[in-house]
Length: 101
Image 1 (cartoon, one colour):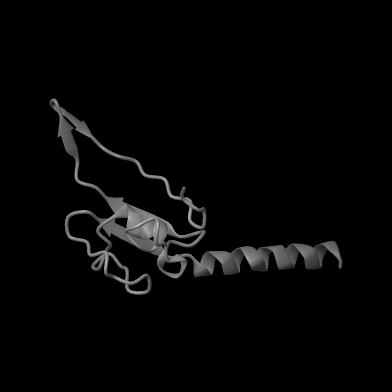
Image 2: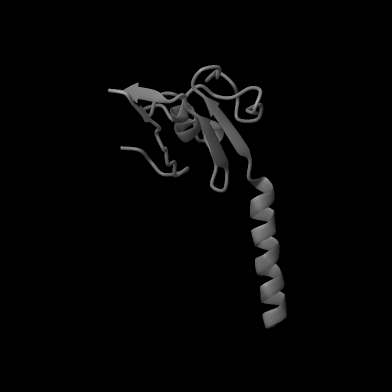
């Protein structure tokens, strides 16, 4: 395979991976964890970040087909919490496809 063909194939694979990526939404105030992966949107978000990570709200019963996929972006709208007069914001990292112990 020529270098040009290899480069073209690499670019095609990268583009196809980004096409499958989806933006997922989590809103702890108005979300609903019964929302499916396919119907998750800004207007129909999940309630918990666990739903995005495991595909369910219980890590002992994950559902990979309903969880975030590699390349997906999760937008989490968290309400700020106040602890002794200081606003605290939580940053959440999710690595889809990784088993949670």
